[in-house]
Length: 139
Ligand code: 5GP
Image (tube, rainbow, N blue to C red; front, side):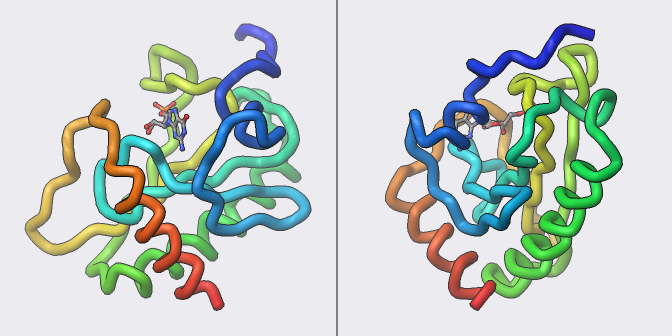
């Protein structure tokens, strides 16, 4: 497996070098809205410390991230009055991973509504509004 690249896009988001719609953070993890949402409220949870994916993550990194995934799962269900949710996590290019900093996708889901196709840039204002809804659900 390749080494962790500190110039990956999520490392830049963590360092504040590129903007993101942050919705939650603690000492170990960050949650922010996906820029190409496949469902309204689609967000990502990452560790603040470096690892590529589940293959090199420590048990401590995974435990911290999963605790935040659960917190955000409950928040998006509340914020979007969802009927359920989908959690996704990809490992290496062969597994569908495109950004090589461990991340979990959290997507609120509604009965009978399919996820959108990948790769379509979301509307910035709408993503910001959805981020505010998530933050309100956390408080
Ligand atoms: P994966 O690596 O799990 O296949 O997908 C990476 C995810 O990161 C995609 O859902 C994509 O929309 C999202 N993404 C890629 N670049 C950015 C970015 O600059 N900002 C944000 N917020 N999300 C991004």
